[in-house]
Length: 452
Ligand SMILES: CC(=O)SCCNC(=O)CCNC(=O)[C@H](O)C(C)(C)COP(=O)(O)OP(=O)(O)OC[C@H]1O[C@@H](n2cnc3c(N)ncnc32)[C@H](O)[C@@H]1OP(=O)(O)O
Ligand SMILES: CCCC(=O)O
Image 1 (cartoon, helix red, strand yellow):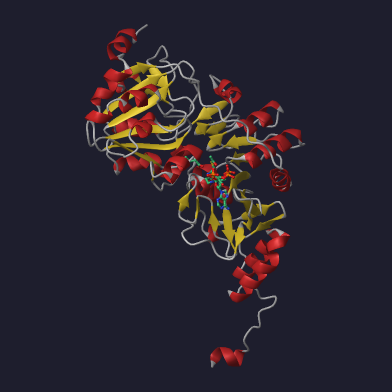
Image 2 (cartoon, rainbow, N blue to C red; image 1 turned 180 degrees about the vertical axis):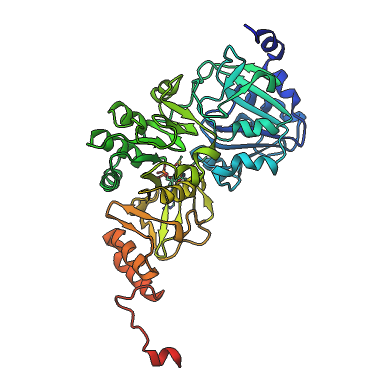
């Protein structure tokens, strides 16, 4: 094979490869399933030789990195993440991970602001033309490799080779070192579908039409919706999404996802990362029906909007009576991230016939069994707004669906009280009255009083 001599010359052990890391370096671990395993273990072994090495990543799909476990005092390794999964969140709870606020679509362009000394990325085996495919995560991987002083790939035959629109692979000539590995891709179990998920999904289903182009976020509700769509009469749906999850497989297997009515990437399921079951990973391998693109393609609103009837369906944590949406923190506790939420809310709104749905169960029950309303008079102190109120379109709970566009603050409050759990509605009305956004009961001043 043409590139085998070059491959052999760059091939080394993980221990040899990580010698390139120096104290004070920034090391990029990439996103989701492309985060390296063997190189991380090898780097952890250098704990006593290194200090102040910052690791940058987003959305960890495995357990905590060995570099973090080996150095809980953060003398040698400081772990940073631009988006929290359960794993990043737990590390952050224990002060073992920093959060970097990002707009996911902008990540490839952050290359101009960051120091990137070493990038380590898991890839699929090299093809006959000398390319390593990024497999399950296209995201901003190529952009960070492009600016990195050294690039190390961890080649894994279990990483699917995913056809791409662009930036889905790196050529051996751009790689400094190659390490081989054989770990299993992180499979995310299908989240159980609750009755509330099912009710929310059914409300969203009512809004969908033939030819819609679907973006689904993470969680049990999108999976419920995928299953409902699979059983529905809907036809010729398309997929242009940030995350490809198992719900798309359900829709595909039911013959719903033809992509025939898409205006761009016709007949292709477009995404920037895949996260789900091994069945999903087998599905994307060498499959001409899918195309991975970098996140600055999948997530830019003006690109999203080139397809008609874009239906964006994402999860949120809390909403206040003013319609501000919190999807990433509860008080100051970072739970998730902005991710691509605002990208798709805006992209769907701009799409002809498009709709953006932000969905939440009306209540949250904490570990002590106490139940709270997720619709709050005001967001709790410290809670971060993810989608600002003028951008918000449809809000959905198990109790109903409401379009916030063009609604005044009092109309929003009324609609949100309707979406709340009945147990909390009276209290919300009392608070709305105090805040002067409940015109049903508020005594409005007379004109004389107003001008005096
Ligand atoms: C991957 C994609 O989604 S692509 C689409 C665009 N991206 C986004 O929309 C990003 C923002 N959205 C998200 O990250 C998610 O949709 C979320 C976090 C809002 C919901 O995701 P889910 O998986 O349904 O969240 P889940 O119910 O598991 O809760 C996550 C955590 O938040 C906690 N939590 C949830 N609701 C609340 C609340 N109202 N108050 C306090 N904590 C809460 C849970 O206890 C859990 O914490 P724990 O794991 O430490 O126990
Ligand atoms: C890394 C971003 C994932 C998300 O949008 O939720």
